[in-house]
Image (cartoon, rainbow, N blue to C red; front, side):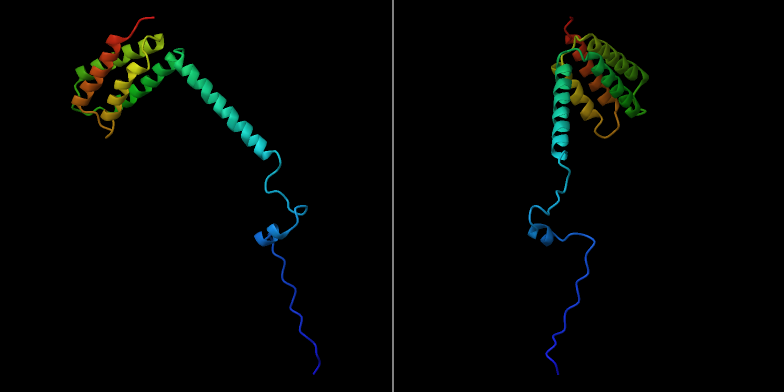
Length: 155
């Protein structure tokens, strides 16, 4: 017999680059995963988002956003109206609507501070936790809105 050593077949080329090949290759052959502009573009976008959020917070705290908050409370009022149970009387519904309407007007005028709204927001959260507002919860909401309306400072 002859001294011929069988040669192993050439390995098939893969349609992708193996991690070992990527890390073993010299830097001149390594192609970056992302284009060069990606870190700058994403960084600029995140900086822009932070600036916009800061400006929105400043606008909301300046007192000029009263109409925005009035609209928000109008939306909450509509949602609350949909959660009222059948036990809530028409008089309770009318009183709740009247207090919320007054509060929205004072918010739009800028005569209600954000600190004064916290009890109303807590009452809304507690009452709507189970997506049903009973007569007792409606009375608590009306009382909380009345308290805000009675202490509002005129501008």
